[in-house]
Length: 365
Image 1 (cartoon, rainbow, N blue to C red):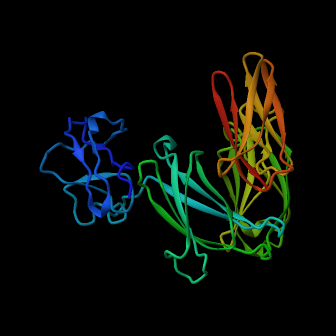
Image 2 (cartoon, helix red, strand yellow; image 1 turned 180 degrees about the vertical axis):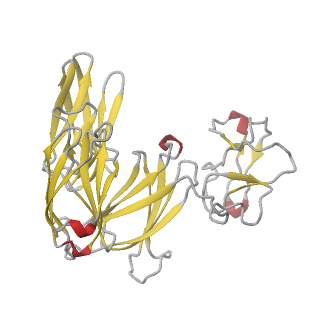
Image 3 (cartoon, rainbow, N blue to C red; image 1 turned 135 degrees about the vertical axis):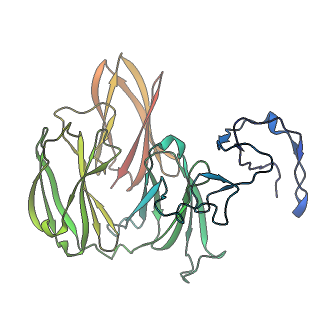
């Protein structure tokens, strides 16, 4: 054991008090180390509870980030008090291999919270039932990762089989565990989105789509976005009305969104996404589309001056796969990247300028 790898839960009631030197334990053969908290750089979490040296403090037992003083046995868990609910929620999408040429599946865990800066980067640990015995134990495979691209956590490159994943916020709380299965590429989804088109743009856009074999379709949602990256639900489409060619118009209420897509879920909790459609006659600065992308990726950028910028496409494992330079002129412009040679998966596009860095989540399908 290496005692130099110290983990400290840095919490104070209001302001950090002066501390004395601390010497770590030698139990288990660890080498004792001496350190002083006053010399360390911590981001202290202020719990804002009445001071008192005789008080006891505890996290909420359901994994939320709250604290309670002189807690009951339940630690005031939000799921034990009527009407008290957590301020974070999660939803998982399971994406199976769509053909036998690409043998890996993936998941997307959508995080719903009012302030993403307080919970991201999100940590995750997943286990793979590698011996297929129905249990998760020391004979199975475990992996750890970090995702710093709100509002979702992407895990790609998953083999066929059973998994368990636990996610937590940057503060080590807001824990949630999912169990899921990646199906074989031979398990073809019966629900198929034949096409999805935006046939009339504007304040009341009109869409057309066609779905074949919708018997296993559990839900269908038209989603909207102002940047092409972060989507929220626009309208829920009743599954009973989606068979065959359909025409759908959004009622003109307020400012229309810039981008739209369809999100379908099967009765087996599998997700299917359409391509992303733009509701603007010209591209919007600071966006990448279509999403998911199959061939070319388009990126709209805005610049106040002529400049040279560097771009880099990074895989979900942090390995750069594409890079280059773009010459920007003053004003808005669109650049493109050819993704044809890349395998399907999740990527991060980073554009570095002299005075700022922009990043875009990219899904290659």
